[in-house]
Image (cartoon, rainbow, N blue to C red; front, side):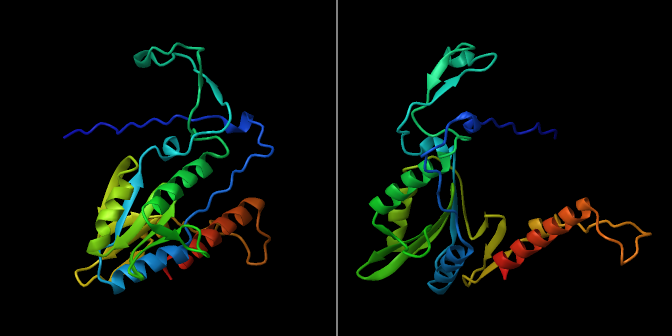
Length: 239
């Protein structure tokens, strides 16, 4: 059976043309420690590990507090009766502008906190839900990817929170998160690997006739740094 390509499109804004002076662009990314805390807590409390992928995350961010104008490119958007050369104003962050990531993070944090979760004071992407003084649910975010687990009494709170956003995909027990393969067995043990990323690491080719005392070329040094960085990432994520 012939299956055609799955085509996707993305609305992109050229943030490189915008004056970024005084513009806050910082937003936290998921730390491996917060991921491991979610894994450890979920396994020890014998709850399913779950992930959620938010669709068009930046378009669900907080409304922009400045005027951002976009000129429609060649061809326009006929199905929306928008002509080539028209100018539209963006109400929400657009992928590509400097503070788009921060806009979505602020929206996500507001939604999560409104559902009773508290933000960790040390790990800025780690949230916990407490009831009667006990933690009943945990969640970590990495931009538009969510990793979470919770006891049955907390599942409804998480479901209500997730439904506040448009979700592209949800997985449980066997999930992919931040380049890692996460598998949970019937006894709730969790195994984390980075097989795909490990297999992408390629040796640095130095040729057959090189001497061990020869200096590396600039290209070889760049390749070596890339291999070292990738290997270090794998070791740090799945140690």
